[in-house]
Image (cartoon, rainbow, N blue to C red):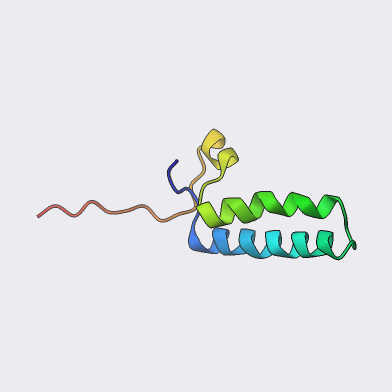
Length: 67
């Protein structure tokens, strides 16, 4: 697995995941709130399977420095 999410993308996913899980725990939006586990894991690992399938990358490309 290679990282294919940028910092902003990862941050948004973590926040959305935590909010959805919090809604599920407080029974405000259960059981659908547990879907927040997916963006949380994706944000923490930096890898999105759908991005891989569609060839999307939001992380900056590393430059190869050779002198």
